[in-house]
Image 1: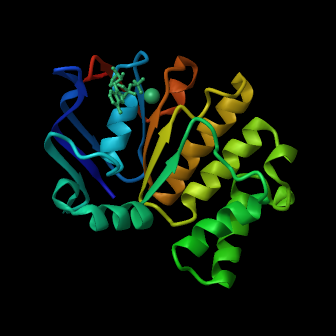
Image 2: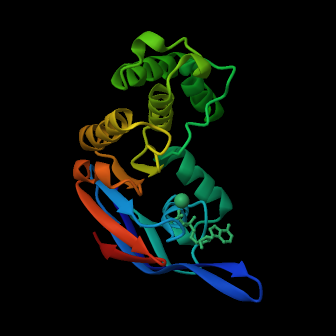
Length: 223
Ligand code: ADP
Ligand code: MG
């Protein structure tokens, strides 16, 4: 699935003025491509993901996912698009403390109405893919930070997304674990033809991306 942002502008209220979070942003990401977005804190990276993932509507400009104009969808249409086509991975894996790794994935399938048996087969396959097949029954406190983040990646893939949006996945990890998570994201993007946008301000991992773009004050430049 190709993601295309055209001339996107997003502002937030800021007293009696507006704060410009995204300004004339153009970006196109094709299936199987891992694009890294860098830039200082406050430059608009998370805002970019929120717009790309149909969590926020831009003030102007368009967001297209394949042929669909996301900005023209209503609330329900956006919810459905997110559920069916988009996976999110955040800074913290945000796992539920009481659930095993396997159940974190099954919960997603259950909430989207999938039947149990195929969901379990897919969940086990994904846990194998992130090298946690042997830890499917461990709960978050029994896993390391890197392992928790890998569960988060597997969970984001449960719905077979065509677009994966990842916000600072390595910020809680040491360098080796961070590199393992970014390599995994790249390999998954390539193998499963997922268009992947990864925000990171950590320059160590950029060599793993297919392409890097940089945000500065809400504007995007080739990195
Ligand atoms: P980054 O992820 O690069 O740190 P953000 O996209 O979070 O940047 O923020 C871009 C700018 O928009 C910052 O100035 C931030 O303070 C502001 N901002 C982000 N979210 C909101 C919000 N919900 N309301 C108001 N201002 C916001
Ligand atoms: Mg951010």
